[in-house]
Length: 225
Image 1 (cartoon, rainbow, N blue to C red):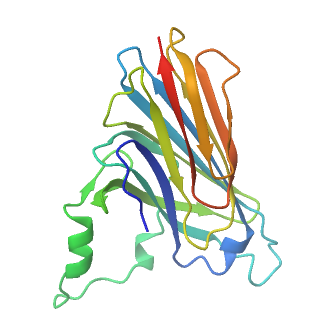
Image 2 (tube, rainbow, N blue to C red; image 1 turned 180 degrees about the horizontal axis):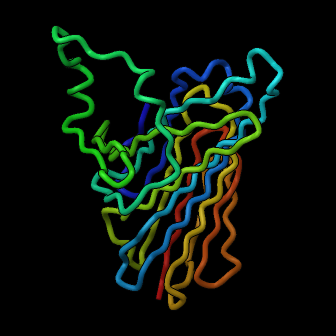
Image 3 (cartoon, rainbow, N blue to C red; image 1 turned 180 degrees about the vertical axis):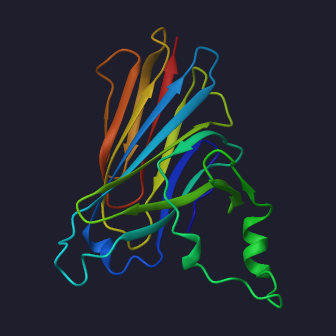
């Protein structure tokens, strides 16, 4: 289940729609950059890379990987930009019949749906999170890469920052890196990680958290001036 948290949060949920059995040959990495300004405002930039290592001569691996990705971030986060997407051709979708009615449960979960005109990214509010959704496609030997840039809905002032990363149930482990930059006048007074990630604060003004997402993980740090 999605965990409630008052501070930073990240989970990426993938849905293979018409991509055959190719999820088993996708190597995925996340690279997140978080920049904290002097006034405490913070902007995050998440890069999701999905490399299709399937054999183009294999019946089950040669299909195009078609993925609808949803990025769950703190409620109230504001999308600044998004890029790297490729939606399936419109002709692949069936046309809704006139007598179809909205799915009430889905409407209750998603609430009001907005669409970012520049990127086609779908914006919803689900389970206490803001969600960015869009399509990624990768053919064998190719990499699909999407970038989401968004402003966090809270300020990070001397006192603390924490991030919880939740793994999609049943998904294969994912390599990830979270690079937090903060004012150099700040110092890390305390830090702690949970799960299997490792924190490195050896460079002034930077905090690096990295590992393999095999289960839920995260870290916290306290700053002083």
